[in-house]
Amino acid sequence: MIVEEENPPTASEVVEENESNGGFCDCICAPIYWFKMLAMEMHWSFVLGVVAVYGISQGLGGALARVGTEYYMKDVQKVQPSEAQIYAGITSIPWLVKPLWGLLTDVLPIVGYHRRPYFILAGFLGVISMLVLSFHKDLHLVLALFFLTAGSAGVAIADVTIDACVAQNSNLHPSLAADMQSLCALSSSIGSLVGFSISGVFVHLIGPTGVFGLLTIPAGLVLAVGIILSEPHKPNFVYGQVNQKFLDACKAMWTTLKCPDVWRPCLYMYLSLALSLNINEGLFYWYTDSKEGPLFSQETIGYIFSVGSVGSLLGAILYQFTLKDHPFRELLFWTQLLYGLSGMLDLILVLRLNLKSGIPDYFFIVIAEGVSQMIGRLKWMPLLVLSSKLCPPGIEGTFFALLMSIDNLGILSSSWGGGFLLHILRVTRLQFHNLWLAIFIRNILRLSPLALLFLVPPSDPNSSFLPSQTFQNTKQAAHTSHHENENKNEDDNIELLPLVNNVDSR
Image: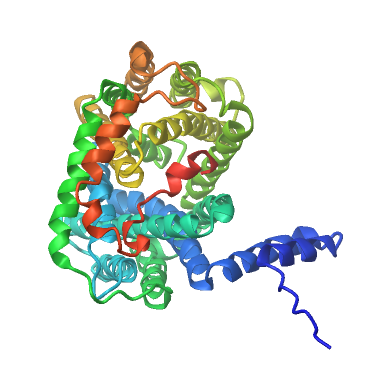
């Protein structure tokens, strides 16, 4: 008698069965089953890598680094707020060259691996940089900036590399692409919220340099991911093809950028970010001033930033469920307008008008931070979706990284512009008489991108507005040497696609 062998259930079917067998416990066990399903379908080392990079390195570590760096510049290096604003821009420079990191992980394997060596490099940069900042209490400002920038480079390299891993698994498991994006977004949001909640406590207990010592743990986890990540080994790589691949990618990107339907929205994205001057360092110094400011403690500062993280998360949820189908131009008009008006809350706080109305500083700033971050997220989400729509087929990942670099350049310009504004108005560590004027000028400049909305296409996110000729030219430029490598494993040509495939889920 022959017995037919039954097909074993898939991981997703196991999860559905587990979820249907419980009642109240489903709320607690469902996330565990979900993680188990992802680990079974792909590999546990990949799931661990996403949590380590997005949740611990960028989320929790990024929150600790922000608060720790602000107190480090103020209390250890004792720089002026305008200088701290400039230095914050300098440490973000590694994020401007994300396309370079992306191209390296795609076309330049090291000892037969595309991803693992770059995780190890990222973790090594982070560990060494944070150890030096932690142990050298009297480090010269130039060296401190160098190691802070090196640590930022480590986080940026890890970010691009995990994006490549997500893209690879999205191609191999297309039905789980949305789950992977949810994993990334959830890890980052929870990590950021936890990090900001505890950042002030740690700064108070062990100081900013002690916080830098703690940041070696996230960097060490990234290094560990590079060691344990499951990745196929390809020892016979022809390194002579690297130069040609770089040239093909650069030619394809330049061909696309010359199209008016592409460079006009890119110009708007840059100007809308650059004109929204960042004067957060001046506000931070005022928050902690004992004479003119409210003298918030380190713990209070951390809690305020954690409320901002909640507001940002609410903004992403609001966009996802109610605003994602609205036309770009219309949505950007209202979000930019609200973004400028929300800045007036800072003006009310600095002029102490809230106290005259009987509203305590802490209560008012919590509301202001939550509202500001929520509107900022609502303004940022359509720009992300617009960026994904500008990416022609064939070079989606690399071109999206280029667009993100343009956005980061706008953020850098905003930071440096805010620093120069604080310097011109003579906002210092102890004098804040003109801080209200800096806030007012910033708010007016936030409204100026409204006059540039003609650069943005009026279409909605569900339509395509790039001409087909652009697609054809880009494909021809991107695949000049493709026929020479048709028989290569398709894993070699995987691009950085996670934000393109489902950008509005993040």
